[in-house]
Length: 273
Length: 259
Image 1: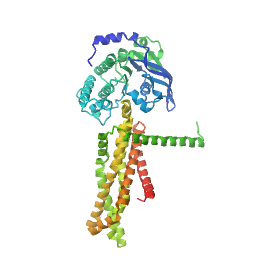
Image 2: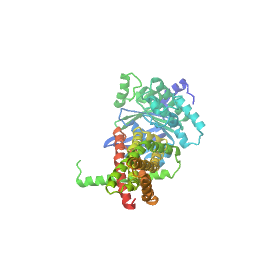
Image 3: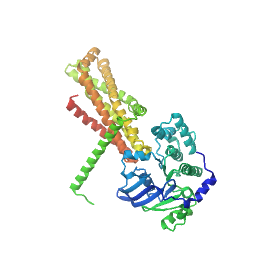
Image 4: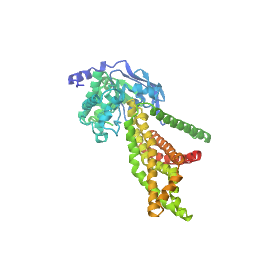
């Protein structure tokens, strides 16, 4: 996968406002969820378009990561429907969910790499489990993906030997190695230096442009989100406020303005939770 | 909201039934994955190494010590009745029928069972099991099954080793230290222990204990609360519940089958 040119990326960013498709890949309808009696969502409705990059924003504890886990079927809602690639994940058994998850890749906030395996074995695991590829082909694919996330020559290291940011990039390589239709990324920029923020941002855009992968990304990183997103959804008090980056920048919604203005007041970019 | 005594009882009963149901479902899931490919031989062998090989030192050392103490205590007691020549039978029968399987199970619960529970619980805490689920890999198949089966397979082998080292410890003390005739010691042991009852019985006990400890350790780890306190609770819970369960089942097996 070669990198798209800067001009392509710029053009892509400029045309965002007109590109939000009405065809939804992920749809949440009247979702209710509470933990220990504390409501997280009370009738949440939102959708994320097919083949686009959607960024979920909101304050800490607003339920961004939980929304990803709901979409992945790792958490069941108390009430409501969640359609992922035309399947209602709330109605599926755990075994049936495995079939849906073969089409989804997920980057967890802390990587979730298996700490008893090398980076190579971690990234190779989905291919070994679900494909008939030879070990040589798997090795080539793993090296290619690790190089793409800026981690060449880390195959033989154990996860504990990597920094937090490197772990997350290795986890991203694992999430995308099967070329899933949908990739869920929980805070992919958290803890990364500016160079690697750009690298990961570019990689996510490439995945979307070249393979048409639907991306749902949670992030506190406003500059990256505004650059890469086709759609931004703010989660505020269990409700979703959705729009294109351009629309949200012009938004007069007090809750959205408060979030965006806080970033403007504090110009240090890349501050993640 | 204050619950009445009846409501509390109902709440607890429902919780207990739900808990038993989850345990049964967990056992069913392990059983189903055991008879279904992929067999995960490499992971199973790795787990046998962790449970079996890494427990060798503690099991062999404890076995030799227990055997030596048994030889000493047995000799002192038997000498009162002038029955020192039965030392081999007393040491052998106590070890094969009772002390071998029970003490091995308690030792393995403390060393390998707790480690197993802690490892799985920390995988829950760090979302590694969710990571597997997202790769459409069943954590019961990939993580739990090899560990539980390794415990089931390792326990009888460790039990056999424990007994061998304990018999040797008893021999050293009884024969070499206290002067019981070596031939008498071995012959009385040979005459007292039967393959059909005693040796088969000890194997049956250790297989059952292996299954129980494997289940308790993996279940405690798998259902741990994803916090550091949860990891701690899973570990201590495995040791406490595992040890009590081993002792309880030891009584039940002995009462039912006389082994």
